Amino acid sequence: MKSADRRRSVTMDAVVEALDLPPDDRAAFLERRFPDQASRVEAERLLRACDRAVQGSIFDTPAVQFAAPLLKEAEESEPEVLSAALMGRYAIERELGRGGQATVYLARDERHLRPVALKVLHAEVLPGSGPTRGAAWFRREIELTARLAHPHIIPVYD
Amino acid sequence: MGFAALADAQKSGQTCQGWLGGVVPLTQNSAGEITEALGALRNGTPGAMDRLMPLVYEQLRRMARRQLSAEADGHTLTATALVHEAWLKLVDQTQTEWQDRTHFFAIASLAMRRILVDFARRHRAIRRGGVDGTPPAPISLDSVELSVAERADALIALDEALERLAEVDPRLARVVECRFFAGLTEEETAEALNVSRRTVAREWALARGWLYQELGGEVG
Image (tube, rainbow over all chains, first blue to last red; front, side, top):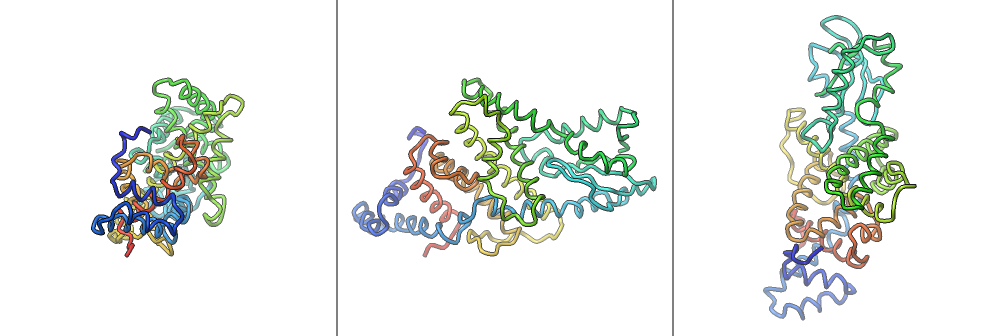
């Protein structure tokens, strides 16, 4: 990376150099670099933040573990959010299967009083939440399947 | 919400495995595409990066999801394992050259950041949508005993702070993506960013401190 891309402050430059030194030598290094106490304060604060960020911060655990409860919740909250969205049309009974892309539920069609399987695309696959083509693929799958009539292909109702 | 209702739930119960896979191209197809796009990237073909990113994003997201539903708690799910497994499974190893692994890890680290932040944004959108209606709490970077909402807010705030850090020094932000979001080792990060291990070590420390301060961590 070219140094021209950087707009690091004098403080950051000094602290990154200090971090290269044994911890006991860092304070003295900053004193030499910034003889004036007023300008040294900022660097000392940043250095303390570097020490502090090492323990008991978000960076302690890798991001995926930090976010695991979020991913887990995304799975678990799905039926709840879905039930609200489908109110009066389909009533969800239970989950039938789950893939990386979608979940299939057993539901009851409340208008026509018949059991149906509901295939629900995971929310983060939908447009506006990532560079995926998931929703477009799904729409195409529905359009294609709806046109087919064959004993081994499940008919699409809705 | 995207959904399709199908007739005959009994029958669909039996066949839904195949149906579940039908939404996007199967992993095998993507593996070919990813391997090919990595080759294109290596040869400097324009647009190779734009093709790779959505493919890698999608596959990593699916793998994270699948791994998570296969186990009781999320504790054994690690980005390191995900990214390495993705490299082995999604790329045809007989057709790669040494640079490809480096390129793949660099792209995967960016993809992991987007995936996790997208999950956090989704959580916030649902919360705002009235599932519980509580306003976002002030963010905390101290990770002990955080609620799901606090985790979402912390990830979003971190993502925004990383944008600001990238304006100061793009490489510092990349180091955070590799080390924190993709769980790469110091050595793998050094390879992915084409710098020395020592640079990675001190810039990772600097970036963490800068972000900690930026996000209002108390440093006394």
